[in-house]
Image (cartoon, rainbow, N blue to C red):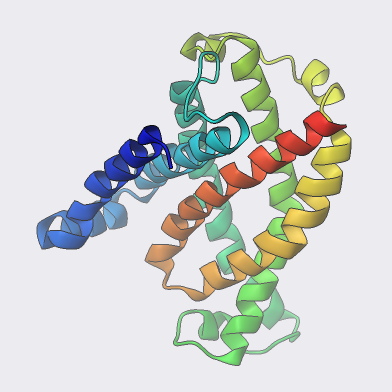
Length: 232
């Protein structure tokens, strides 16, 4: 472990420890989260998902940041993605149980999702995760890759957001062998569906936070995908 790793770990501990030590800080977080859930989604993903990308960069290159990587614009992009994800989670969390109940596929799913853990709640969480990760997730992952590429193509500067994103050019040149063969085909069924099944079992006020924490894992997965892409 290098000096930069120790500093990085220490910084994370200093940032998060007040939430566990001081009740006032934790209560403030809960109150703010309940009143301004979308703003908190922005903050959670801007911090945690970007943290994941920084860790991914460390795995890939040996450093947590480098010229042109664009931590700040990535954090801004992740913040807006986080709001989008929070809205999507709400839609699937309420919509899928209602669908399952309406068509008598699994009766009582909607009620089970708001109660304690049961087999029925596990079934509901699985179907919510399954539908979200086979419809919303591929679109999100592709758009995320497009924005990342755009940021890097503009030197990692915030001004990248002021320039039109050449979506056709970027999406045409994406490494679809990796995007499909690894990101979609492997991470969605083997990681994201099980991980989000667990997420939707948790109390609702912890679900977006857990999804943001999974953004750290996403950073690692993206670094693996990038390494695989470089080997092609």
